Length: 275
Image 1 (cartoon, rainbow, N blue to C red):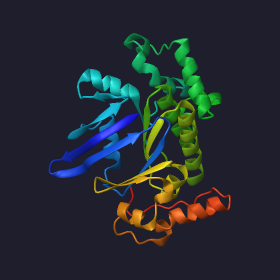
Image 2: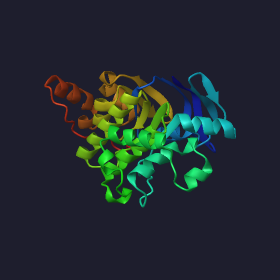
Image 3: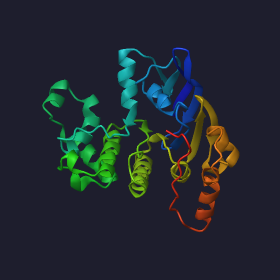
């Protein structure tokens, strides 16, 4: 169980995040929705201490983590990050990029020489199998498409064997078809490994299709926490104040109708001002 207790973050007099608390179960796929400036990225960066929160704590399996160096090392072993821009070392092979996720458990000498134990190589290859890229293990990372590179990023996070993966707009730069593929692999691989996922998304339709639970942020505050089926027009308006686009407001209704007809392909909608 991952518990986020009363996380707040202020930049000077500006409160970017206000007393957000969440409990996330192993294997749960949680999507965060909210407009630009809602605090979505700030929340993820405070969870793994890329940004130091002004208040609050993160608790993993009953253990709270402080900001001292030892706790930060342990926390970052439990919390993996998937970035929007992949953050791969393009000149290295796909396999070596995934093995980066194992470096926390290796000596600095081995990592500097790019020498990895056979057990770690097996873990990395299995993670590539989970995202259907084992056949690309020896390819250079810069020879892959954008969607394939993001799947390598997912495999690298899986190789870390974390308790939770944080995904910050992982499909923002991808086309709709590739986005669905990447989100499908992210969800299926996290389920196979029983790893929780907290994922920021732009697209309301994708959030409702892939998320088992939707967390809505607005103005740094938690305004919705519940199932996709509960995302009504009123909920969307709470998350996106002032939004009047009927195509976006009715996203949940359209998704339920498509599911009723047995069709899963979403119509991609972005809320005005979303980021």
